[in-house]
Amino acid sequence: MDKNLILRMTVNGQVVEVPVSATDTLATVLRENLGLTGTKIGCEEGECGACTVLVDGLAVNSCLYLAMKAHGRTIRTVEGLARNGQLHPLQQAFIDHGAVQCGYCTPGMLLSAVALLEQNPHPTDDEIRRAISGNLCRCTGYIKIIDAIRAVAEGH
Amino acid sequence: MAFDEYVTPASVEESVAMLASLRGAGRVIAGGTDLVIQLQHKERKASCLVDVTGIPGLAEIRREDSFIIVGAATTFAQLEQSPIVRRGAPVLAEAASWVGSPQIRNVGTLGGNVVNAQPAADGSIALLALDAEAEIANLTGRQWVPLDSLFVSPGVSRIDATAEMITAFRFRPQAAWEGSAFERLARRRALSLPLINVGVRVQLSAERTHVRRVRISIGPVAPVPFRAGAAEKLLQSRPLDEATIREASEVAAREGNPRSSLLRASKEYRIELVRTLTERALSRAIQAARG
Image: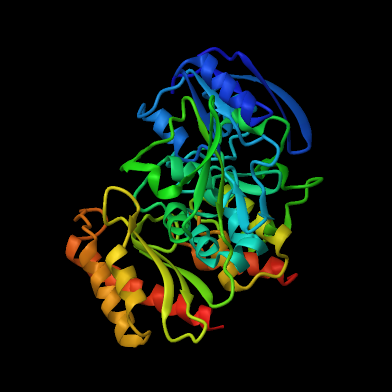
């Protein structure tokens, strides 16, 4: 399919223009056109959450989200979390709490956690569990992930 | 996937005109959480997608006259959080909170849920309990039709997404002596299709001794979202007590015809679930109606 459309969006603070085809998903454009391979592709049907990115602050599965839907919108990926060489507090907490095992789910988990804490800075454990309920960790390291998110919410 | 154009019309009229000019080669897309997979698996075809989610007002929830109006492009996350829906139609807010995952709820829409016509679609089951109507727009104009007239068979609705679209749903908000509730069991609490789901809306008599009017909707126990008419009649004809609720739930369990599925559950287990979940939904809705 021809890349006959122009997609203009803001990715991690930068305005980009990318030629895309109507069939491209946002996940594909981020990875293949923009080289942002931190966004992982797992199940490709919205079940695993490895492809989670933020669109205007909301967590979405970028594997199910057509690239053209992002036109005019603001996207954040895991590459945009660190600032001035400093890891995002959630990234640091994931490291400190051993919340990363194989790492494949980590970018998606981080973005779901960012979306949660931006909307609800002091979530209960149930709210944390619900916020990451669309992200599968097949190493099953959920407890440490929840610990890491809770620690940031409590300001540790 | 085999389409090469993507258009974002600014109004319903423009969308319908575009679809007409595409003569069956266009297709409406809203959130796309079902459609993108269907296109990838070549279950549906389109050479041009008509994205209706940017149409002003199409994702709005509002009170108008004696109705709550929900725009067809409203997402499940919006429904779950809307004070209007939570107060006026708890069955719909609860149903929305069960759909998929946070990521799916941020994108998937109520209109898409109905057009996809799955017999256990949480949004359709809730709307059926609410006696909702859908507004259909096509070249002949706009028309309100009862929701239950839209379903044909699993995955097939009367909406021809290559030529027309749903623009909104409407239903009466709950008033005095009314309550509603949604119950659902799935293998997991997220990203899991329902083994059975049940929606109930009930209105009690002013003395609260009888059920004046009740709607019970159940999925998946038939090829389309199902109304348990016999159980509704029984509830409306007897003094309201726990025995009546239990008996109505038994009747509801016998009315449906669930299938055995290796991936999901056996027919026998699902019949038991209909009984249990109907009883729970009725009890909760009645308790809410008593205030």
